[in-house]
Structures are given as structure tokens and as C-alpha cells.
Image 1: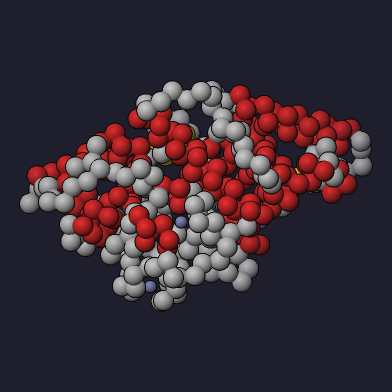
Image 2: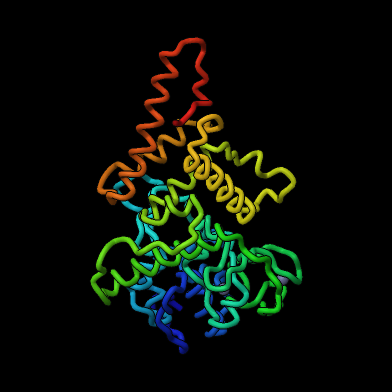
Length: 336
Ligand SMILES: [Zn+2]
Ligand SMILES: [Zn+2]
């Protein structure tokens, strides 16, 4: 039968905060289909592909969700611009690695209470649940395998264990919880803009008390700006993908993300303390490129201002280093 002619009996809208792939998985389960693998066959996609907005018309036809909502939560490659750019949950993201759509993470408590996967969990630096203050899980507590998008339902592992709130995840650090809250808030902001529920009084929300130094920098920025900044600071602090894999599974994006947050936080703390003695920028070309992207195009003023001030300090020191003579180490520069 032609997939374009199908409709399934159980229909639903995308729920607030629900991810696109999570919606497809939930609807497949409700309609007793064989999960995302069967949907991918019907959509003409390979088993390894992720769903995106190209699939919205068929998902709309099959399961009834509004097409605009599906586009919003499925996302798409930003056409006509740099091939790395991605639009996801209404945000333009400068790097595809800001998203993690292949190795799902979940909060067992949220899944048990709400029964759906959240958009926020698809960001590669989202390691905690903002609501429960616990680390997200990427492995099953029963079979100890990675949780996959090919599981039978949102709340069940491929080993058929039903995830429950009793699966005891570790508490998140203040930084991890604050970062998750910030991502949640950014997603919610764009959803309200999409639905035009209200005109937002300003583009920034008042920052809560007790933010860590990294979060004080990140809070007023756009989602893309904050992610650029965090990756830039982690890189400046010497974060290196190769070193971080020692002793871990080759695919351990959750641990990697925790390491990136920690490195960025340490660097932000040095900036705050103006600890010039220890402030060296590793891999400056990568750092400069990430910061420069926050200034280009029509980026929001908060992103531009912060990136500009960091870049200016950085370039000023670089020119000093060039003039000061004996073999300046371009790979290890003082920032301030
Ligand atoms: Zn939760
Ligand atoms: Zn399992």
C-alpha cells in the first residue's frame, strides 16, 4: 500500500516540549507499529537516518499532528547557508554537533509521569533534567546497553524493561542543572513565539540567583550563542575529544558533555577571577571561529557584545605576543 494513503487510528498533536522523534516513537507505539524502524521503512529512510522536517507531511497524514508543529520539533538543515547550520525547535544552530539526535538520553521520572521524550534532551550539552535535578540516563539500568531510538515505546528499553522512577539516577551538579534550565527556557521561548501566545516583553528572562560563573555569561545569550560560547571556552581550556575518550566507550556523548561543561566552567571562573597567570587559550583558531560566528549576520546584541569583548581581548594579546619577540607560542596565548 502507498504510504501516502495511510492513516492510523490513534491520532495526537505534538505535546508541549515533546521532541519530533519522540512524537514519532510515541505514535508508532500507540498504533502498535514496530517503532521507528518500521516508520523509517515507510518514510523511505535508512535505519540510521534521523527524522527531520522532510518527514512532516507524511507524519501529519498518518498521525494527525499539525504540520507546522512537526516542522518545529523535527528541524531541518538550514538551506542556502553553511551546510553545518541547523534549525531546531525554532533556533538556528551554527554547528550540527550542538545536537545529539542519535544517542537518546532520558529522565526516567519525566518519562514515567508524562510518557513522552523531550526536545531539550536532544541538545548535546543537556545532561540533566531541569525539573528533577538529576542526570539524564543514556543506558538501561537492566541490560546496561545504550538506550536507543529503536526501542519499542518511549518508556521501554529494547530489552523490554519498563523505565521507572525507581531507576536511581545520580544527582546533577548545580552547573548541569542550571544549564538544563537555561535550555528548557530557550525552547519554551521559541515555542511561545511560534504559537504567538503572547508578545514577549524582552528577549531575556531575569536570571535566577546563584548562577555559576559560566551560567552568568551564558544566561542572557541566545541558545546558539550560549552553545558557541560554552564550546569555545571548553576548547580554550584544552578540551580535546581524543583525550576525553580514555577509559570510556568510544560513544559516550553524555560523559563527554559533562566534561565540556566542566572545562568551560573552569575557564569562565578564571575569567571572572581575572586569573591572568593561568589563562591560556588552547586551539585559538577553533575558539576564534566559534566566537566570530556569534558576531556575524543578524545575531542578537547580547551574543555580539560578549563574543566581541572576548575576541578583542584575545586578539590584543595575540598581537602583543607577536611583537614581544622570542618565538611566541601561538597555540598557547594569554587571553587577558
Ligand atoms: Zn525529569
Ligand atoms: Zn535494557
